Amino acid sequence: MIDDLWYKNGVIYCLSVGTYMDSDGDGIGDFRGLQRRLDYLHGLGITAIWLMPFQTSPGRDNGYDISDYYSVDPRFGTLGDFVEFTHGCKQRGIRVIIDLVVNHTSDQHKWFREARRSKDSEYRDWYVWSDKKPANANTGMVFPGVQKSTWTRDKEAGAWYFHRFYDFQPDLNTSNPHVQAEILKIMGFWIQLGVSGFRMDAVPFIIATKGPKVRKPVEQYDMLRSLREFLQWRQGDSIILAEANVLPETDMEYFGADGDRMHMMFNFHVNQHLFYALASGDSRPLMKSLKATKPRPATAQWGLFLRNHDELDLGRLTKAQQQSVFKAFGPDKDMQLYDRGIRRRLAPMLGGDRRRLELAYSLMFTLPGTPVLRYGDELAMGDNLDLPERECARTPMQWSTEPHAGFTEGHKPCAPVIDKGPYGYEHVNAAKQRRDPNSMLNWTERIVRMRKEVPEIGWGDFEVITVRDPGVLAIRYDWRNNSVLFVHNLDEKPREVSFKVGLPGEASKLLVNLLTEDHSRSDKGGRHTILLEGYGYRWYRVGGLDYLLKRSDIDTDAAGKTAHPA
Ligand code: GLC
Image 1: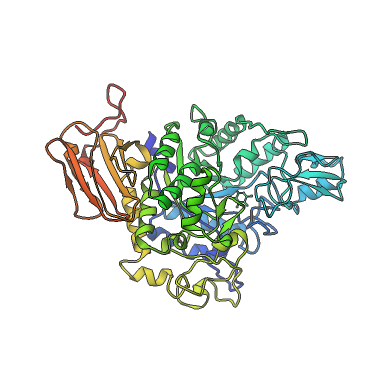
Image 2: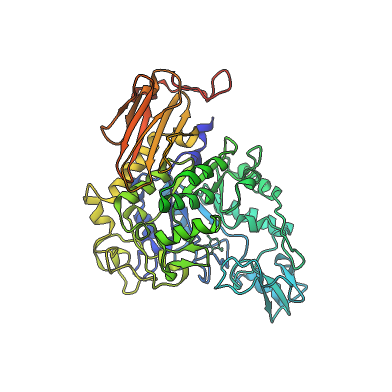
């Protein structure tokens, strides 16, 4: 049954153990601290945690430079603490997915240290070498402006090594069967310790051909099938969520035409067009991006997000679209990064405007896919642009008005807590917002609950409804004899729109509002006319709440079309 697939319908919450909660006063968040905050997450209603890298690491790229895949970095605790944590999540019905960072290791990893020592080392071939400086050494950098090349000479090895990311992150030779076997072993290890899957880092680079002679890397998509196969045999309900910022044309290569590759992918395409829509008030490119990313196997799912731990990458927009997003949300040079993105958190980007924040999250929670919320966004936390690169949006969680926002009892947190301005912890913190019925936290909790009450989004099929106003986006989902409909006004001015639900029968004459008493009855011809305030949004169930009781067990009618309430 499709509704057994937990990742198709839930709410994922992404956090970094180091900046979440410190239990021992050393200023660094740890698993015991996180454990104590599980009830908070349970209360918020999220269904899965995406835990960012916590394995042993020199920590030069926020943990994305791992030096031992089979351990917990001692700063964060022990393997014992980790298992207590996954167990605590299981008890509360929360799944855990962890980062799988296997495109590269840290240069401090034992494998690399062995590999550079001698050409005869059994690990030499685990990395990608060249005797001479390759002609394309100064191309293909992921962090332009900060990273100077993709090949660096290693004195000890007497050769050049390939690194798609920073020079301290040598790429693994992922075509080497020994490396591939090791990746499976790493997955098997963490599965055994209670995780339900992986957010796989940098997937297009993992499967690309690598080497000094490779001019145009070729993706070896078959690798994705073997990863999935292994995982499914080990633990049938575990998943891979791929980080792959790719063009819609290749989506099906990642999902697999038979749904036999990645279970989930982040929808970077929709993400960028969503920000353009928020910046310009024009929903048309967003609509186009929804249609372009519509094709996917029934078992596959999109991860829908607004901001994550990296910069907001606008590289897929046209130059003019990029400029309008920069102008609206990141006009100053120090708000931008890598010539293509914005490094701020969402709340400051939207000027802390509650109406716009709600609009943005309402979209994230109702567009096709599973929403992925970033820690602190439920409080509308801010950023600290004095910190370098992407660190500005990775400050400690703001729990209370106690010193250092209650994140640590120590004197010096690993990263400074935001303590000034409107986003300072004295104003923005969980303790205060918990008590305030109108807080962002309580709004988020409610929207998470409502999202869980409309599984049609996760499991159903969608259709964009014509409203003939570029400022307004209307979308309907159908699943097992039930339909829901969402309307968003991207413009700051009020809008009146009129539309037909697009379904036959009496049911579509009534739209029951799930968030307020403001329901809608159509005219005789079946047209609804709705007045939306600036940045307004509506969540409706078609036909009324009773229609839920008419939910069918099957997805399609006899003609093979989605069954509608008639
Ligand atoms: C991914 C991560 C990013 C990291 C990079 C290298 O893009 O999201 O944070 O720096 O991979 O591992």
